[in-house]
Image (cartoon, rainbow, N blue to C red; front, top):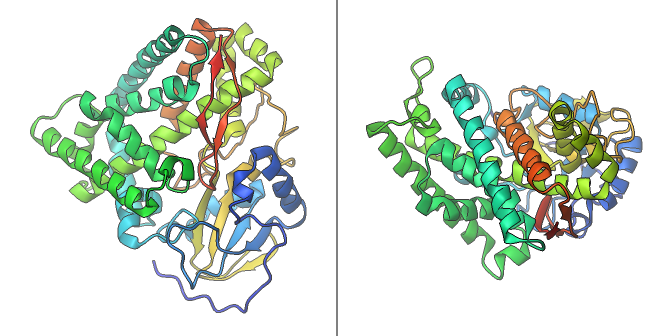
Length: 421
């Protein structure tokens, strides 16, 4: 679907700056001070183009920031007006790069509908059971290895990042020899704005090289599974057919990139933030440990709300639309701030308090609903249940040290965090 050009006159930018490098280098608590003001007084506000854009666009005039929970849900569920096909990040990314890296995440109907149906058909009950069994086994091994490494180890490196890559590898059958490099390439696709990670490298070159590598892995896997199908998700994926449609090689490769990135960061970051939250709230830790099996369900939802691992997603208005009392014009970018929505005082009682029994908990950690709701939400929940259960079971006194945070406007990242026990 095409959108008409922007024809509105210039408008003033909001005095609260959500676009600067400095803003995204602060803590979540510091950012919440700004979000709270916007939710209360200007829930939909106009801002300049984000600083540190990968590909600065001279024609980019800015974006609408949506900070209130109700408005985020409205944008999420109105996919006829708020399109994903022009990109879901702040940055304006070339169409070919968008297509190759974000799969149906950055598509609109009818193509989005077809590809999501094909992908969803591969997640059979048998596949889901197999994935959950491997998650439990991997979580037990990972925590055992962390325990053996000894107190003072880096929790992110030895635990939080391990379960997602092992889960992904088991799901799609990534060879052992490729697993570490796949994880590193997935990291690169969300770390191009992190100067520490880049260490002087050109961010665009890192992004393209990592994407090309993941495509190569995906295409090799697809070719092998077409000839030698096995009991894994990738075999189901390349053979899945819905209403006569199958995934092409480029579509398979793009979905693999999306799976590698989305399947990595949601669980990895939530696991790290969860351990820090349990360390800082010993009463909540004790409450969870007292009846783990019956309480982990609500606890997982609260950990996701608390961490909000994916902080922002963008849409583009297809038509003129009024939202939160502001007139949005066709062609303008609209950015949903999930971090702010998950702290909305009108929805959550005491949102700045960790409450592992919070129920209901309508967080937007997997999106605000609609056709782009996270397809892998159940896998992420299964991983969190398993890893937290093993941590509290095998190392009940584990404590998190001070985290090293990754600046950026997309992933709520923790680069490293020591743990003691």
